[in-house]
Length: 281
Image (cartoon, rainbow, N blue to C red; front, side, top):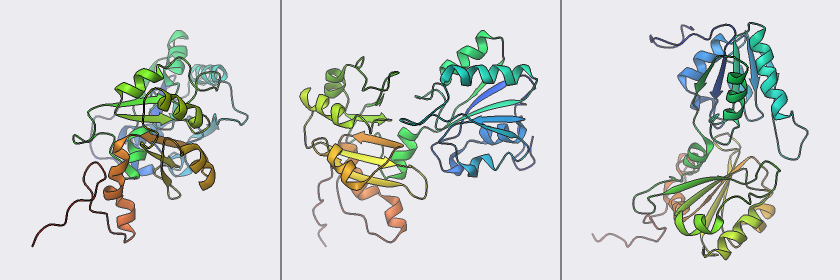
């Protein structure tokens, strides 16, 4: 264990084991201490597209193998990645599978863990901070606020075929979810927005699209369900992105802490995004 961490009974990454670890949404500071502990011990790191060099630099002793999957681009097949982890473990290596966000939140970490267990490889799961919460927090959007919503639903924007999910009950989500957070949804956001509107969601409902969340080049576009697809195109946004639908988006106008750090003054709004009356003297 590295001397850079405070005293603690830190777990040891043993030879022949695979740890599936969440690297967080991008900002290296959002990696957990257990994640850093794993990086310091690994012989080989198999990492995803959303894991930056700032995190990998904490493991100078380890071999690095890229296994990123990005929509519309040549990518390693999932089964090949899982079997590569098995192979490395059987070589007696200390293997760290490093995935963006949390490995069990739309990260296919469960599939990889199942394959490893089926092949007799011991595993440890190291949770990470997921982009659907932290990415929006960096944009000044709380996914829950007691004056706005008491529920939040996380969905993926595509299924295993790459198409917009057909197995989801969009009508149920539209009527039962006060705030909806969509991972990997930029490609099909037009279809998704249309389904939500058809199911009764207001076409004027606030939407925020945040790209490269928590990194220096993070961008957030505020729009509505009716115009989200056109506004994404007009802004030239590119994935990866987190999309938030619901009244919580309005809170960004008062809670955009990054803008405040840059010298901008927050607007005086209530939790529903309405201007507060001026206080009397």
